[in-house]
Image 1 (cartoon, rainbow, N blue to C red):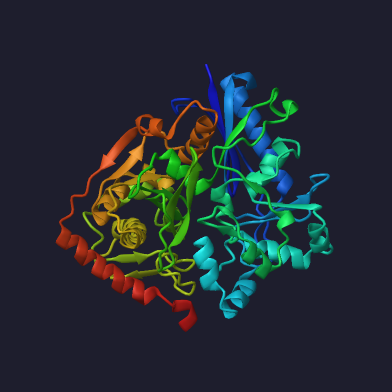
Image 2: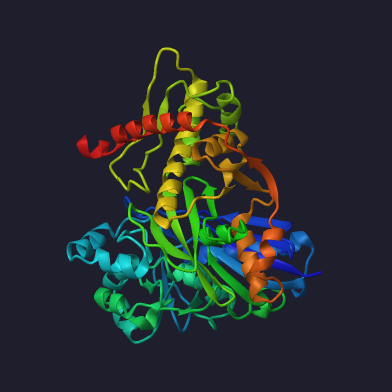
Length: 495
């Protein structure tokens, strides 16, 4: 029997999952690693801790499954995106801590580029906003701040990569310096339509092209693991950024199909087909994947607070444990006129207001804990709904259904609310490890064992939540939501 091994390298832990070719989970291993905050707004990881934790997880998953490396048909990688690393080409020694996607140290660099009138150009070429979230200004900061780095980079002595590239380098013993188009598309340096590094953007930023990895298809040949790492060489045949991997793992293959991953925040991706859709309102245009010789594109929107809203209820004593939110919220039929805007760290798409702050409105003497719990769930669902409608309008596509994964997707009431407020079915898969599953499927396609056409039949639905709310009621609730959001916007700036 043959298996697929997925490395799911995340922001707080490294995981490895062994799957059958049919997408069934055989074994899981996970190891957390440290987060470092050297200054306010800075977030860093130790590159070697990323690598060592991921290698341990891969070995442990095989051990738990009782499977030898010779039984693994191919390995796939899904990774935290935008996180930026640099290392020596000759030795593989990291030259600075990994600057994490959450890091905000380059805000002034982004502002300076906007003042030069360059945001439109970057937007047109890359589909992204000028924001510290993305890799390019992180890399520029390193070139300007690390002594001797620019000179060494210009001599070809330094490698840049996102986490997938760092893992590939170490898995192959430095033989492969590569990435895939989904990760490249998150750097602010990659042309979405030509699928190449953009020479003009590199010149504008003063980034030497010699630093950059080769871009290979998401189902490309990325070499094979060193024999001594896992006991025998394993072909590496799939690489995807984590959110794109989840889109593939949900088998959202056609234009108008979307998924939302509900973790600390919520990430919504809508497949727009074989052409990029350029959208306003803070929506991002990105690669969905490059598989079987064809690129697919997506719109992406981020909601900064999802599961963190439930965590806040726990922290202030309204819940004992996060899982209690469902039973508490079921004690009432609605939120009793209460609106909960979960803008603790500002508002993401479609508002992009960093000065917004969380708000609870509509309280009366009749408001009880259950109303607040239900309002928190509704607040996340409203936020995702705004993004989904903005995407559907921009793409000219009606959202057919939303496939849900992540921690909050285990909450039946929340998915009932999401279906009601979206007005479309919400589907939960039987295999909820969709990020790792997408990486495994990409590897299976790259190894010739699967095709994109196989995936819809392999994806299995566990539960379907249908909208039951009358349209007039939904519209009335959204009018109230929009009023609440307006009161939350700009709050920190006004204060």
